[in-house]
Length: 395
Ligand SMILES: *[C@@H]1O[C@H](CO)[C@@H](O)[C@H](O)[C@H]1NC(C)=O
Ligand SMILES: *[C@@H]1O[C@H](CO)[C@@H](O)[C@H](O)[C@H]1NC(C)=O
Ligand SMILES: *[C@@H]1O[C@H](CO)[C@@H](O)[C@H](O)[C@H]1NC(C)=O
Ligand SMILES: *[C@@H]1O[C@H](CO)[C@@H](O)[C@H](O)[C@H]1NC(C)=O
Ligand SMILES: *[C@@H]1O[C@H](CO)[C@@H](O)[C@H](O)[C@H]1NC(C)=O
Ligand SMILES: *[C@@H]1O[C@H](CO)[C@@H](O)[C@H](O)[C@H]1NC(C)=O
Ligand SMILES: *[C@@H]1O[C@H](CO)[C@@H](O)[C@H](O)[C@H]1NC(C)=O
Ligand SMILES: *[C@@H]1O[C@H](CO)[C@@H](O)[C@H](O)[C@H]1NC(C)=O
Ligand SMILES: *[C@@H]1O[C@H](CO)[C@@H](O)[C@H](O)[C@H]1NC(C)=O
Image 1 (cartoon, rainbow, N blue to C red):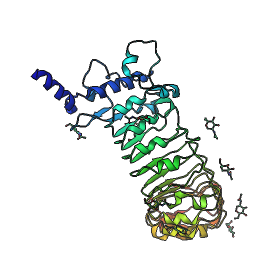
Image 2: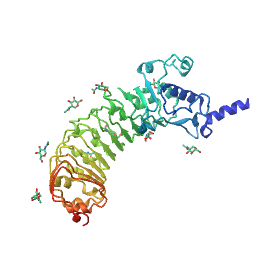
Image 3: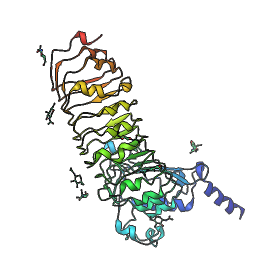
Image 4: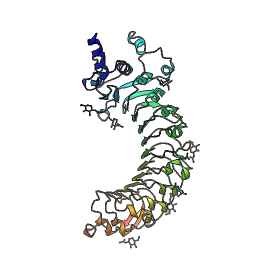
C-alpha cells in the first residue's frame, strides 16, 4: 500500500528521473501515433514500454512539477534533405466528438491514425514551448492549440502544407511571446491581424509566405520583431497601415510584397528600428525626411524599389544620428541617379554596400577608402567613371 502511494507520487514528480504524468504520456503516445512518417527515428524513444516520458527525445519536463513543458519536434535535418516527421491533420477528424480518444485507436490497426496535433494536445496543458518547424505536417492548424494557455513559444514554420482559415483560437494563448507560422497558408484568414492583436505578451510575430493581404487594423503595441515578408500585402493604404504605428519594433521585414505607395512619413515613428527591410516592393519616390528619427538603424534594405531620385538627396535623408552604426545599406535597382557623395566615408561601420543597377554617374569618391569595415561593395551596372586606385584605399 505504501509502496503504491510512493510510486504514484514519484510518477507525478517525474522531472529529472524521467517519469511523467500518465495522462500526458498517453497524450504523447497519441501524438506519436499521428505521425505516419519518421524517417530519422526522431520518436524511437517514445515507446509504451518506457514510463519515463520526460526522458523521451524532444520532450522536456518542468523540474518542479514533472509536467511536459517543451516539445521539440522540429526537423533539425531539414538542410540535409530529410522530410522529418510527417502526418496529416484532417479537418474531418478534428470535427469528431471526444469519443475518438487514444484508447479507441490503440487496438484496431484498421482505423487511420489520429492527426499528429489533435485535441489530445489539450492534455499537455503545461506546455510552454512547441516547435514543429520543418516537419511534413499537412492539413488545418488544429484550433485545439488554443487550449495551451501557458504556451510562450509556438513555432509552426515551414511545415509542408498547413493552412488556417481562422486564427481566432490564438486568443487562448495568453502567454504567447513568440509566434512563427511561416509558410502556413493564411490567405483565407481575413481577420489574422485582429486575432494576433488579442495576444497581450507577443514580442515576435513571423508570418512570411502566408498569402496575407492587408487586413483590419491592429494595435500590436508591444511587438519587437515583425516579419511579413513574401506575402501579397499591397496596401495602397500603406500610408496609414497599422504596422507603421508599432513604436516598439526593432525589426521590420516587409520584403517581397507589393507595396506601391510612396514611403510613408509614419516610418519615422518607429524610432526603435534597427532593421528595416523593404526589398522587392515597388514603393515610389524619395525616402521621407522623417527617417531622420531612426537613430538606431543598422540595416536598411531598399533593393528593387522606385526611388527615382538623386543619390545625394537620398543620403541626406539617411538618419545622421545613425551614421555611426549603419552596417548594411542595400539600394540595388532602385533607380537612383547622380553622384555618390564624398561623405559616404563617414558611415564608419558599413560592412555591406550595394548600389548596383542604378544610374550613378561621376567618379567613385575617395571617401569609400575610409570604410575600413567594408567587406562587400557592389557598384556594378552604373555609369560611374574613373577607377578605384590606391587613393581610395586610405585617406
Ligand atoms: C532541470 O534540471 C536539469 C538537471 O538538473 C537542469 O539541467 C535544467 O536546467 C533544469 N531545467 C529547468 C527548467 O530548471
Ligand atoms: C525551432 O527549431 C528549429 C530547428 O530545429 C530552430 O532553428 C528554431 O530556432 C526553433 N525555433 C524556436 C522558436 O526556438
Ligand atoms: C480545447 O479546444 C477546443 C477547440 O477550441 C474546445 O472546444 C475545447 O473545449 C477545449 N478543451 C479544453 C479542455 O479547453
Ligand atoms: C489561397 O490558397 C489556396 C491554396 O494554395 C489557393 O488555391 C487559392 O487560390 C488562394 N486564394 C487566394 C485568394 O489567393
Ligand atoms: C491600442 O492599445 C493601447 C494599449 O492597449 C490602447 O491604449 C489604445 O487605445 C489602443 N488603440 C487602438 C486604436 O485601439
Ligand atoms: C490589393 O489587394 C486587394 C486584395 O487582394 C485587391 O482587391 C486590390 O485590387 C489590390 N490593389 C492593387 C492596387 O493591386
Ligand atoms: C506618426 O507619424 C505621423 C506622420 O508623420 C504623424 O502624423 C503622427 O502624429 C505620428 N504618430 C505618433 C504616435 O507619433
Ligand atoms: C527613374 O528615375 C527618373 C528620374 O530620376 C524618372 O524620370 C524615371 O521615370 C524613373 N524610372 C522608372 C522606371 O520609374
Ligand atoms: C566622368 O563623368 C562626368 C560626369 O558624367 C564627366 O563630366 C567626366 O568628363 C567623366 N570623366 C571621364 C574621365 O570620362
